[in-house]
Amino acid sequence: MGLFKRANDALGINGFTNNSGTTDNHLTTHGSDWYWAVTAVMAVSTAAIIGLAFTIPQRKRLFHYITAAITMVASIAYFSMASNLGWAAIAVEFSRPGNHLVSGNMRQIFYVRYIDWFVTTPLLLLDLLLTAGLPTPTILYTILLDEIMVVTGLIGALVKSSYKFGYFAFGCAAFFGVAYNVVIQGRLHANALSPKVGQTFLICGVWTISLWFLYPIAWGLAEGGNVISSDSEAIFYGILDVLAKPGFAVLLLWGHRNIDPAELGLHIREPGDIANPSTHTANGEKARNGTDGTQTTTTTDNTNNV
Image 1 (cartoon, rainbow, N blue to C red):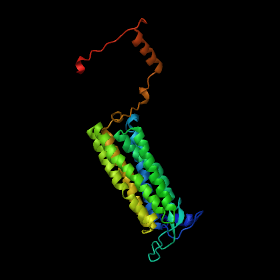
Image 2: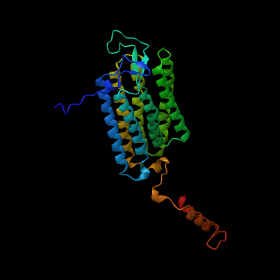
Image 3: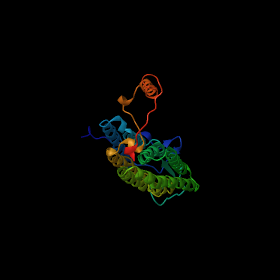
Image 4: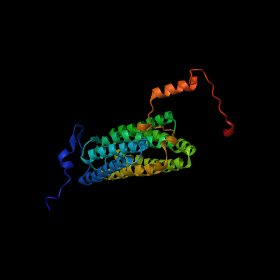
């Protein structure tokens, strides 16, 4: 039986001291095991989404590729956290010596989690807002607000003093801007396209924004207030990420099964659809000048269009 027994040695191998210092308020093997489980979920989800993409025409794969990128980046981030890497030891603002789970004064903060969010949350919003057919400027502005939300969350997590909650407030304000553009603007545009687009967007949009409202709570209990242990933090964020990424992927791709990208204003060609530009030019000249080179005028009877 010893041949088949394999322990999780990540914490022993990588330790709790790095360039930022030593943490005494950190992950345990139970938390690391959970992170490995989430890594597997993200990796399997990525493989499944890529596999599904190859069962449909290339012009309909855009949302599969974007969504697979989300889970792929998340799997790398969770691999890092499971391996006890990608963290900094940060002095806590709220010391809790009476609680042995969070009694240490140097909390382990996984900055790799924020790198994950910096990459994946804009992609997730891109999935949503392209589905709604929102104008490009609105999409770009929403993504900017999202990046502000993630970056301020990271800065707040790395700050010891109460000023961390100033960054938390900036992040929440940015989040409300994101939520407005998704819930209000996105819904209006999606409903204007078609009922099936509106329904898909409603399901995915409500799912996403509802889950995202829970992330500030997790931040306040973990990096912000030092209320819950690093293992509890791992479970809280892990459940949210599984629901917000692979769970979102299931809802989005199922909804898109009967939606043509052209309905969303996305005109993507198959390789065989690319025409010869010179042929178009020659045909255009013939249409304008006639076959003998003389100028012709074409009129259109619009009687049937009235």
